[in-house]
Image 1 (cartoon, rainbow, N blue to C red):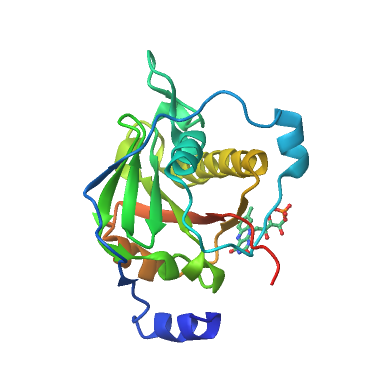
Image 2 (image 1 turned 30 degrees about the vertical axis):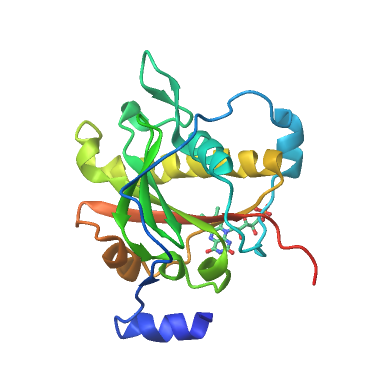
Length: 217
Ligand SMILES: Cc1cc2nc3c(=O)[nH]c(=O)nc-3n(C[C@H](O)[C@H](O)[C@H](O)COP(=O)(O)O)c2cc1C
């Protein structure tokens, strides 16, 4: 769907998910993340970039596992520590994965994807057309109820900051794994919140598309 159509549908409250492809599983267990190896950090930093052309092919489950772990995984089990920082360790930002087969929420402790909706929400995750056909659109959502200890005036900026750290982890993972990615804030947040069934306490921050880079022709 092109950008203008999305804008027009958004204006009349009709920007909606597509039916899911195939059978959406309630829980999608992920293989353990491969947390050794990859490109050296300085090389990944040298290659980090935004790309906006994606091969529609599904990502292997191992890749999904590794990139979700990079985004928000538990890296210190004794402390429940994560790969990305959060103010007062509130861990208020969840990563959702919009894929052709459904919308899932990443559970870092179980390292699993939990189904949120058996619909294909990808096209609602942003105004740009490539989000519809790329194999994965991540959505970073702030859960304000988890920020009780954070002063109200700071909650919004702290959540954005945490999402920024997570998205940079994904950028570096993608640079290391030869994947394309782009972080995106140009979103119809009302339409996306509705498509995801979010409550008024849950806030869409940013989305990030991931896939293999499109090859020529
Ligand atoms: C907060 C934020 C919002 C962004 N929103 C979008 C967006 O909606 N669509 C898009 O294509 N790129 C978006 N970008 C990506 C920037 O356009 C990109 O990072 C910039 O052009 C620099 O390119 P580079 O990431 O390759 O260095 C966003 C980046 C940031 C940090």
